[in-house]
Length: 341
Image (cartoon, rainbow, N blue to C red):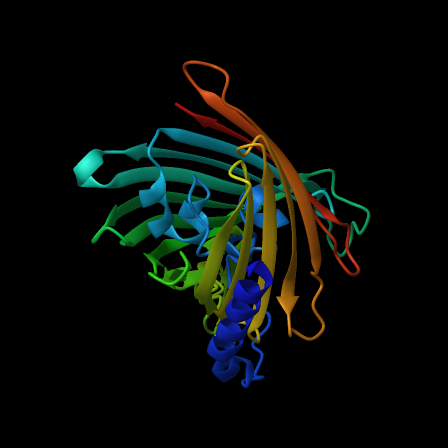
């Protein structure tokens, strides 16, 4: 019976995906703030990013803001993701349930690339100066159940990118929904992420001295001017997902999920993932695969595990880890600690 239900879910997702997978136009490298596309939370990352319909903890603020309506306690989450080339991403989020008023949350995401040497035409080995670059997002979230089985949520976030003495900033918005269908407990969800203003770099690094009329003598030859940079859109993303929990012998659970992703800067792809939770969520083993049907992808297999301890009277703790295999770059590792009060 279990395998028949799994097959039914796969067929349903395949039918939903057929229209979007037929499109093959890519716009790779045409957006700014790409750090917004880096998944948050080792649980979700270990499941291949197939988390739109599962999202039921603090990390839901990233994957699907409607998901925090399922959180019935104050939760905090801190994650650290180590990427290639000494790049790392830190995330902190907190969620506050407010009963009939809904659920509120706030989060901070920070990507850091460390310090680098300033070089020039005359000093290719370095001038002795250092510079750094980083990307940041500060988000406020609200979610609530509209009906017993249908929730909606929103994010508003301030986004900023810095490099040396120049920066770009703007606002972004996310919206998500989760619906628990009457069919075998299947959950259907959707989200739109990073709809907002374009980003444009500005700052002292773009300052030049300009002579507006070099053919004339006696005029001001050193007027301050700035190079005008192009504007780039945020990495807008539409996600549709389904998920289903299967209870095994009362104290174990199997979760499977499939997400279809339609971005504005690449072709469409599919993420799949699963989780086996043992002994009432004491131990969880996870696996998944990212960017199915996407050509020339760097991503693929994901794995992870987690341990949850509920024995303390005033809070519970979860510790999670995820591994993501990369084709050419260094593999990614993510660590997270979640507290519930």
